[in-house]
Image (tube, rainbow, N blue to C red; front, side, top):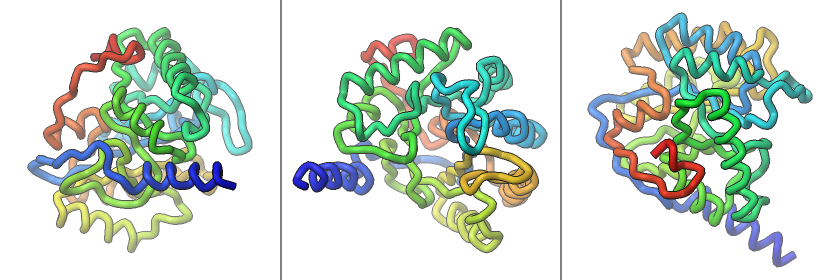
Length: 261
């Protein structure tokens, strides 16, 4: 009982306390498209839509799951990871095994990130793995502190437009799901992004004609991209968006990050 209570407190602290504050200094609002878990459809259909519109996205990959099939989709293959990287898209860290980091101790989390980095570097030797996404959106205060010391950003699943002073340890997002992102909501968040000179981060999973409940169709992704571009908003992967908001990378001394620093 007490352990459950304490676990809940640590999760709430990770969500609500701004532990890596940064004052955005962007000259214009901007948008990022991100993909979690990276089903093969996110590569085959999602990246294709972005490429057709001249956009680069961020794909958060747990390399230990590559090629595996789960309830909804087949995860991206290793050669497809290489193709994404070669095409200029950003590869982000999503742990190695796609595990809930709030259930890990410090050593196990370090191993997860190290294994993911080493596997991805085997595939893409010049990879800069500098941004992280919490699998299942789950985080705890100590694991958030640990991760944000290794990565420039950690992205969550909590809704909002990033503007003003933001938490780089828990970037806010808007779901890019067929079932939840209505035309009115899209208009509202785009208007908010422009009014607040903000950074709008979309996230989704599969990009399939009949998507899962946490995915979108190629048609819907294309329409969303077109709506964003019609507003004149630049679309950048997380790594480039950080430059746009005035963030300067700091050297990392943790072994997982040494080669990227």
